[in-house]
Length: 369
Image (cartoon, rainbow, N blue to C red):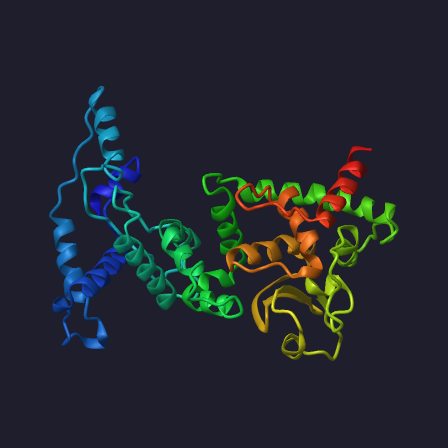
């Protein structure tokens, strides 16, 4: 712990009381025989924490030297965490203090991607959500990165049927009830090494969104842009399936193809009642009086403000990728266009249907002219 803190900071630091508490609790899990069952208040880890504190107090702070040596020592310290000769992983977990800084440090070694290590990362992820409903996002993101291969081996397996997949995945990964983690999973799937993928994606969507408004007015499927941003967003989303039509008509209960993505809740209408009667199990955004609900099938997943309705189509696409879902036929052409034009998906096959080719040809002709 001391070595990691020294390597991560310019000044020599020692683990604080909170970090020692977390380490003591972790030691309890690996070595249950260390528990002090006679401790008052259920603090079975207190005696171990005292021993750790005593050990830290006995460590002498090294003095900085002058000249070229500190730089060489500094480099050696920085390379400690990525050293391939080390076979153990160093971990510290955040406690209930609500710190915003990421304190989870996992060494990346040659065996990081082994099934045993990925199973251990998943276990740590579960413990984070047991200890705190909304744990540190950076900690969760790091664990999701390390456990990616095992997660998708599970999601893509024959064990999960598509209709059961969202509920099973959310049960195993409650982190996907948060927009940041759903969008970050989209990045992992399409461009894992690009840390700027999400900002770039939002910029591409904004450009597409503006062009789609003029395209809708040009094709006479929507009116000129309105001053109310929420109403304008609703108008654009409703027009998108008409701009890029699919050859398959929507279900009779849906009425219009846009209902596969968007539903405006009536004043006396209950969201759960609507979801139970909905003929599709695909992701949908429900616009309520004060906010929006992103749901999959009959299951509400998360809530976001109405001001973000314009980018909700990106949230829907992220759900299709994160939960490994099939496009509904009535909006398959539209989603395929967004897949290639906005997501820049180069790993999945492109839609080769005549409706997709026709829609893309008309779109390309409009934006070039």
